[in-house]
Image (cartoon, rainbow, N blue to C red; front, side):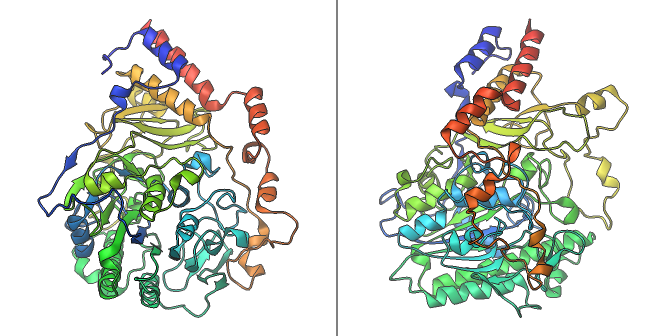
Length: 586
């Protein structure tokens, strides 16, 4: 371990060498093992490719599942987690598109051009065409691949649709938020359209059927139509629940009538609909002969939004932030193929790890892929071995605009976890600890109890308002209450250098302006692809239209020229902060 005050030579050495000392970057490898039956026989991966059922929920917070919060009724999820491996050091991205892109590509968003925000309905953007996706690789390994639910990875061309990205079938929505009954989706006043699709066509006539139930019924039909003995199956059930709008069926609200906060009551009821959906699917897996050779993964896509009923308590922050409440995810793995079950894993894991892990389970050759940011963590999940992951790049977003002009200057928003340490720069989002919502209106008097104010006239509050670096020891301080950036400038400098390393590998952000041709009024009232494939430009050519910060790197020559012309904002920032740190030490 480094001493509390690192010598000046060490700071300079870190910046010149460009790597971190291995002793303090070791990941958290603590395991809490249960007393259930353990199976230590066999090979690292199952000999026969298993059926893979991946259940992805939307905006489900850390405090929104029964085993973290008994007031939330999730008996099925609690049982599956208790009989499998509960993941308690697992991370996702703070918003929808980035998490989904990293799940399907195994790459950080700095390596896909999707560093900034989400893909909006009218944006001509989608997953980069040159990157292989997990379902494509599973198809190559002999799998039948199906997707149900929310896509939110772009659809401006048919080449962007799920059925062109590796799924044999798709039934669900393409945008980020739809009505649970009418399937209407809006992207601003007057820009609304129908968004339910069956493969590449609009699935008209489904209004009035609750989406969670509808997707569960379709999942059962897929399972019934497939022969589990002849071909492995990959099913991605990407539920829109528990994302807004808060629209649970009335029968699910009654068990939560004691909750005074209406939003929380409805939100909890929607979590219960998810639990019932998972119950029905696992029942079908057992009845139809899939279960004994199956792997079930359950994961949220990001943290919850407290002001719409969710809860990340006692974690700091919320959806859309890089605080733990935005990126620490609820997840577990349930499978008869796990060698050591009934335990809680605190191994460091990230959503990018599912790509190589599931592909490895399928018997695919991960080495044939392009360089991935994910790791094959099946030995960690199945046997309790140490995680091969020691760090997570949460993101580097050079386009992020601070909420308050001038607070953070030109500091890019970035966050990284290395071992036990987590560094945030720029404006990581509202850093409040929001208690469980038990009052009848929002926000209530409790709001000031855990509020991190930047508007007070006190000198300490003013200083906090201009902060652009935070450092936390997550293992010792999982709720991010004790900023150690001033006490540990050595760690700050090392992690900034690690950010600079990642930034040198980043592709430029691709975030094009809205295209008016996407208006559903021009397409029969539905959200559909609006750029024809025969217009004369492919996806790469379309993306090349956007220059400057929107330009996508395509050639090594262009990348080299760009690096020679200017230093990135983050590299410049590292040098500035290093000068400040070394000056203070001198």
